[in-house]
Image 1 (cartoon, chains in turn purple, green):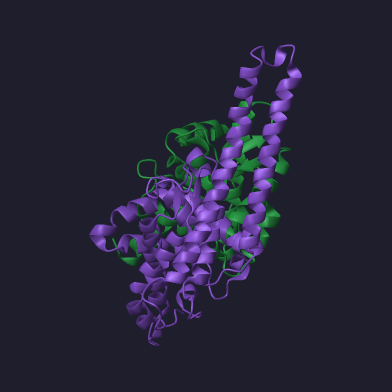
Image 2: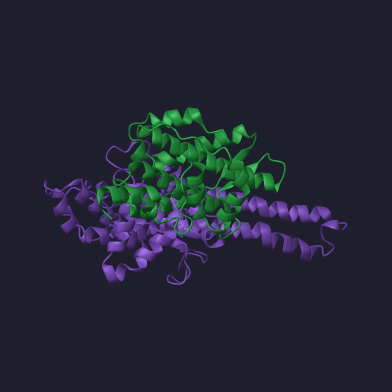
Length: 290
Length: 203
């Protein structure tokens, strides 16, 4: 059941925006520290050693190479440790980091149970689902990408603004199971489109303090990552069973996202012409057979 | 070809088998278990490509939905057609994929031909076992598998690799039914369906 939309804030509060911007900045810093350290060890270190001793590792001064390599790896280790400690202090997130938490039915994330921060739970859960779905990808753009929690939060408000009519339908006691299933699929479709719009998964290869607009590039595989997260939660029912475990739900979401990406992409492409009907139908079909 | 009798009995006892079989959460673990048993029978192991199985499953579910209205015409033949469509999609994922990925990577067989044969045999055994379970579930005894299957086994694999829909015809032949080679995917054109429709005055 989707509860009625509460009289919540029409958009993100300035405090939430500031907090999420700070989190995203810290995470971008962390990613860049890792990428930079990797560059230090794999690229700069060997080049430096080569300049100092052109004979290379087969030459007479082999120890020098080992020294430069050791220095680079030591720096990497220090940088990563410092960054991890900073992140751990700022964000107590172990259950999310290990996917050891319970998923709720999708509508519950839009219930506004926390009136001071209606989008808080949604932004946290979907941030981590997206992050884990992204981490499962091994292609280069994905390795240089990160999830921006502020964009996840923005998606919440896009869906919420269109939610009022749907919430009233769920309130009506005359709704049949078919109506409820269709409304659930419509909510999933709306969320998928919102997440595609706000592009929470972006490549971050420049330092976060560089030009603000230049350091984020959408990932072409965005759909598969976002779809996995939406399906993970979309497949949870009130009697969730094993699937309400985040790890199980995300595994299922990733399987279906990989298998049905083309069908979802085609349905998304029709969105402008049919107001999302094809996308809702695709979700309905998937849930019927899951 | 040795079917999985214990699994067949176990599946057939499940009260919601007919609807559960079209649910990914039932199908995936059932397929995995049947695959492990089928490979063990042949002294081999197989690695299953999750995404390819999932794609084959949902493509199959889509095809079954398309023909759903025919189930009331002849429920038993509809189950046979369902199994044929499943064999078509799963074998296509094994033999007919666009890239190098295959549904099953079999280990433990002597050579590449054995790998191909083992994979196809395992898939066919699983689908035949599911079909037998569906028959038992519908209150109909298991059907005997064609004793001459080995005579056309190579032809079956070769044709299914080129034209996956022919798997439907071969499955009919394995179960002693008349295949419709010209239009295998038109379930309404199956002899039993046409006969049932004629009897009921639909055609």
